[in-house]
Image (cartoon, rainbow, N blue to C red; front, side, top):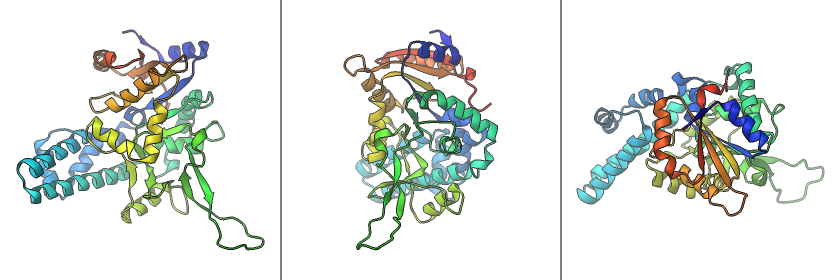
Length: 344
């Protein structure tokens, strides 16, 4: 397969007046700072745990793939509960799995820029220019990342970008009785009021999105930095919406049972035009994303997804995409991910 430059791809799609959408994976964050956002950095943090079962697991499974580790824990649980009939051991495994999820949240919080002002203005503005190509033309931006980088860039560049709508909005707090000269109060930022014009979609959740059981809310700045507010919520046993399940079936199950994630997934399944993927590897646990892309490609008529452009960094990446090309129901193209200057 031919590898094009990113600029060539954009020029071609613009000349064709093709609707463009963007899918971001972990490579988006790693291109900012791979020392902070790489799986290896997370792995080293996660291995620093006092849970004896997790320590044994890390010594047996020599991998930095968090999803694989979670998948192995689920397999161990099934063996313990159904084959060995050892409920005590099965309970220990469930506890270890929950501990690992908690450690993941702690890791992402610790291995994260302290606040938005830690991102140099020139890098933020450069990234905004990259996103502008999609948002200004009413394209959708989909991210599978948990971190706050995309959120911070969007917040700090609202004057440069249009259509920065993530579906959240404040709702009135209703009063029980009439009060003269009453100034309406607003509650939390709840997902739903701006759903119809939503353009930003966190497919696997994110650090700043919480499910209260009644509604999905977005954490924002108050008197503390955003990350501090998130940590306070986690100390109160409130956790961000995260898709941390192991394989594709488990991920999809989690997505379909959460109103926000389900909406984002369905939106990916209904896009038309072309999708540009940057930093997303399409690994063995990502088939649910391929399924959504294929649903978009199989829509009837001309209003469907015609093609996907996947960024690759190396020959190994190229070979991988070529080996799974047959799984896509739309035309697959490649571009050089190194030709995209997102941050500098």
